[in-house]
Amino acid sequence: ESLLRYGLPINNKEVRQLQKSIEDIRQNVQSKRKSAALDDLKKVRGYINKSESKMTASCRDGKVCSDILASMKDKLPPLDEQLKASADYLNGSDQERDALDKSYNIQDSIQKELSTLQEQMIPAGYETPVPDDYADLPQLKGRATVEMLIRKPDGEQFNVEGKLFKEAKMKMIIDGYAAPVTSGNFIELVQKGFYDNMDVQRSDGFVVQTGDPKGDAVGYVAPPSKSVGAGKNGERLIPLETFLKGDKAPFYETTIEDEGRGGEATVLPFSSYGVMGWAREEYEPNSGSSQFFWLLFDSDLTPAGKNVLDGRYPVFGYVIEGADFLSDAKEGDVIVSAKVTEGLENLALPK
Image (tube, rainbow, N blue to C red; front, side, top):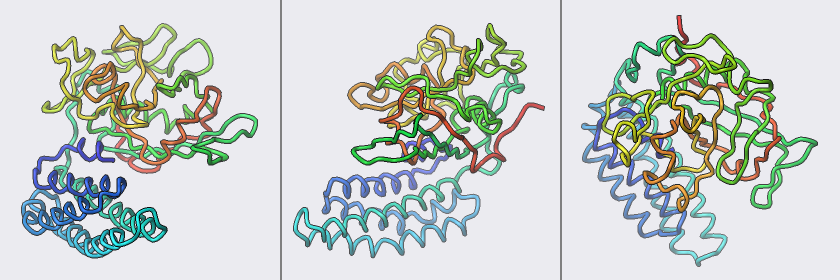
């Protein structure tokens, strides 16, 4: 969720400082660096006290943001109490674990409020600019949430670190701010039920991939975009879409190398387990249609900004719940259902 927060189209350095310290608390709680977590908590309190007016000034509704910051401040004393309690207990004891769990839950609540605060800083009516050439393709004018249910054939169970589950449930945030055309294409297909009852078609320890329908077509068959055209079996194709940090809009139909910008950072990077990328043929930038993949991120194999994916394939979302199920996803597992649960109003279909 941190990457999604950094991907928001906002410009407020004070809230970014606040974000870093809040997220550092989480990392320090997870690694039992209790003193460091307490130091970060002090920074959070200081940033809110010192910079509240500058943060609320960036909000569409300053009163809403003021209330959010007040709620966050109210959670700091109990978080402080639990962190100090964890430091007093014997390392590895049940009491320490309980205090750290409570600390984690409070921090998680603060983090969710941070996301709401930052979303308030998106300018009213903001839309990522998209060239008129792609007006005949669906576009997502914001974000949407998709929930997906996957089962194994013959009643087998998912094994996640020794725990068995009858089915895999995943929640994904699809980001139309960073990839409006790619995200719009995906959300339209989800809404149409295109992925329902579709098999996982690739699982090789690097990615889990799906989206290839039965039959000759390797994508979604529909009237094509005038600018991009159709595949050899009538697939509706979409352009390669790349949004680099510092740019005001994505560029289309060329790779990061074609633009002479290799090594620059994308707004949404391939640096999280379960990051979602749009599949295409390696040497054809406009060959994507309906196939996508989840990256089984490994920092040693795919370091952010130094891998073969950033700027070559679009990132259009992240799994925020249930990503661990991907570790046991196999070819032949079935997507029972995929549903848009939030943000469907942000989908703009061609007129």
